[in-house]
Length: 283
Image 1 (cartoon, rainbow, N blue to C red):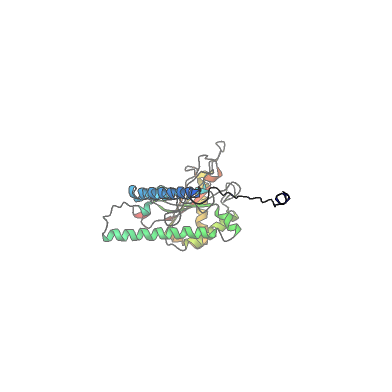
Image 2 (image 1 turned 90 degrees about the vertical axis):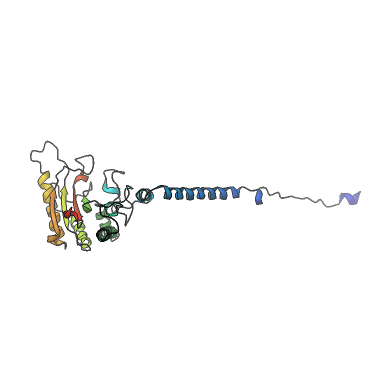
């Protein structure tokens, strides 16, 4: 009896591991990711087969990031006030498909020498416009002052050509109020323009716009002011190196074509520098 009472006490602890191996749930997560990826792949294949080239361009533009020259897309009056500004050769724009320079339709029969020459000329112009836009974008990284100045610029490609629009910001006007004396930021911008425009040989047009004045103003200066500011930009372009014989047109539109819905907003104070297409005056 005494020997049995002195026997050592042995305690066994059994470790139970549950959910291991093929009985776990980790494979379900991996399988769900695989099925999702396959669904996206087949959806992509279906879209490629069921859409036209122009529609695919629009879809691609919608999902691509928009990085315009200035940080407010399109320079609109609010967070969503404007579209993006770049062409197919650089960054995505407003998702409406190909621009005129990349249009899939043509009046000239395909395969002819005239058609090939026309396509080559359009491609060269598009490349020149894209190069100008890239140079403008590059200026935004030169210095803090250049970054601030580039907030005044947006660009867009139209049937007429490449439009470089410079505009007032609420706390940074381009000109003295109701005058044609340029501010320091305008001088900096036009100095940049001279270097950028030297890479192309296109003719240039300058168009001025101003915001509406209150109706109580007796002598409304909008017509003269828009024209005089456009002419001042012309002179500054020539001083920065743009040949005088390449400037074909100076126009003032007063307050007739506001950029935003509020006709008295400072965003309507702007000047457009247009790089004209080579065939613009021939049409």
